[in-house]
Image (cartoon, rainbow, N blue to C red):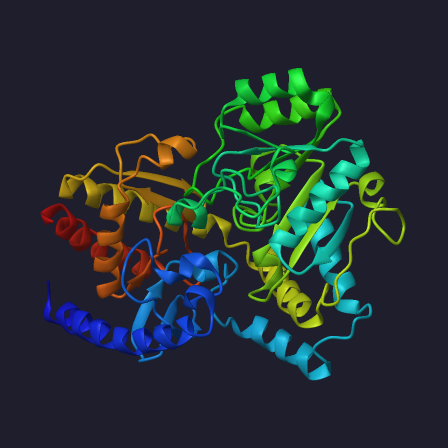
Length: 443
C-alpha cells in the first residue's frame, strides 16, 4: 500500500469520528439513526458516512473525506452528482414556487418525455415514490381484472406496501427480517411468491391458478438481491402466460427505467408489459414515482374512472423539472454505449482481481449496474444470491472505503456507474479492488 493510501486510511478513520457523532445523535431522534434501513451499515459494520456534498462521480463526507461514488443514490444519478443543467432546472422551478397542488406545465412535459420513450406507455400517472407507484399499479391491475392475487418473485423488492414484502430482497435480506411483519395474514395470502428466473414454475402457476391472478409483478432485471439478469425466455414466458390467463404483466422499472437503456429494460429485451412502474432517474435526484400503460387500463384511474389514487405533492414541479432535464440530456447525449463499456471494464477488472486473490467470486452485470457476489456462482435467483459470503463482502467494503471507494453497504445491492465516471475512475476502482481483495484473502 502506498503512502497516499495510508494517509487516506488514517484520514478516513478520523472522519468516521464525525460520522459516528452524528450517528449517535441520529439514533436518539430517528429509529435506528437512519431513514432507510440499509444506510445504517449493519451489514458491513462501523458508522455510516454522513455525506455533505457530491459533484460528478465523487462525494464528500462531513469531515471533508472524498470518495469515488459507486452508489449514485441507489441509481437515480445516471448523470452524476449536481449536473449543472439539472441543478439549474430545479433551481429555476423552485424560484417560481416549490408546490402548488394544481397542474403545471412541467408535469405535461415530463409525461410526454416518458410516453415518447417507453414503448408500452400511452398514459402515465406521476406519484411521489417507487413504493407508491408499485402499490397503485397493483390496485389498478386488481380493478381492471376483477381479481385479487398478485404474483411476485423471491428477492424482488417493490417498495414497502402491505402484501409486497413477502420474500423481499435488499434491506430485508441484509437485516434478516421476516418478510412481512405487521401485515395481516389475509393480505399476505394474496401474494404468491415464486423463484425468479424459473419460467416453468411461473407458467405452471399461471396455468393452474391464472383465473385468480390480477397481475405478475417483476423486476425485468433484478436489482434488490444484487443484480440478476433475466434468463433467456423468462420474460417472454411471463408475457405469454399472463396474456393467456387474462392477467396483467407489470414491470417494476424503478431501477432499470432509463438506466439500462433510454426505453428501459422492456426496450432492451423487447418484451412489453401491460403496466410499467418507474422512479429514480425520472426525478433527476428528487423524490418521484410513476406508473403507466395503455389508455384502456390507465383510464380506470380517477378522475376518469373509479380507481382512486391521489397525492398532494404528485407531479411536484421541482422534481419534474429535474427529471425532465435529466431525460432530455439522456436523449441528447445517449451515454448508454459508454456506460455499458465502462460497466464491462469494471466487471472484468473485478473478476480478474478476485481470481488473482484466489477468492471465489461472481460478477453479474447489465449495462451500468453490477454486483460482485462472494461465491463461485452462477447467481441466477434469490437462493443462489443468498449463498454469498456476506462476511467477506463486509471486509471488502471496509477495505474499499479506506481506499476512497464508496460501495453499496450490502452484498445484495447494485453498484451504479454514471456518465460522470470516466475510464480513469473505473481503472482506479479496479486497482483499489485488487488491493482490497488481496487483503480480504489474507484475512
